Length: 208
Image 1 (tube, rainbow, N blue to C red):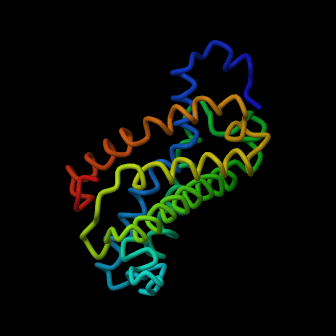
Image 2 (image 1 turned 135 degrees about the vertical axis):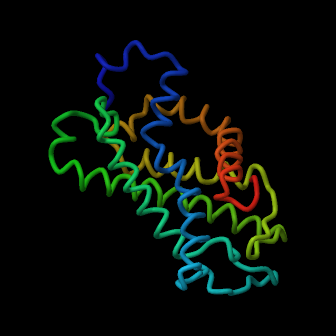
Image 3 (image 1 turned 180 degrees about the vertical axis):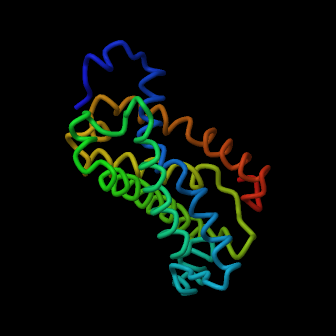
């Protein structure tokens, strides 16, 4: 659970920042997955669409070319690396206690970040599935916009998995439920901001 001597003076906004920080590997994984999906094929490997090009009974792709194994695996592992780097900060907010951080912290951080990244991408793929069912295309570099389906599923997914499977840690603390709900509400703005930055620096082909 959260340390009261550490958290008791936090207001709602600070609790939201804390929640965003410890879940940051799950919030940035879409950028990592996009990088792996875009750059790895340039080396001659992939892309490998998760749906294998299969069509749903409605005649549309199950997920589309935008969801690849190289993006899913590479993005998740990169989130693991990010979580490991985050634990090097002087104020370690990733683990619940200094003892927990000191006991196998490197491997634990990597596994935690990979878990957060993977569960976030599960939600993102779920959103893509429903976009395909609505007839919204995603083939190659051509993407359709759906502000809610592009943003909410990944945030909801990573928070739900965190609350279910990371109980006893900061990530699964019930006191974070309200900050999580508030973050879900503003996630479309956060996601749009991250994507605009990625587009400006040339990491994304579209600003959404």
